[in-house]
Image: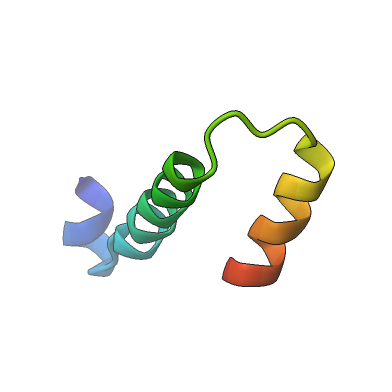
Amino acid sequence: MLNYFINRSTNASAESFNAKIKAFRSQFRGVKNVGFFLFRLTRIFA
């Protein structure tokens, strides 16, 4: 919080990315292959 007043920067981009990951995870519940899940995640959001 102090970082905003000192540098005028926020963590909005990190929060947005976190929300995208949560939405992606909710679409693919019960994923068996974690490696493939992480691969898809990096391909879509990276």
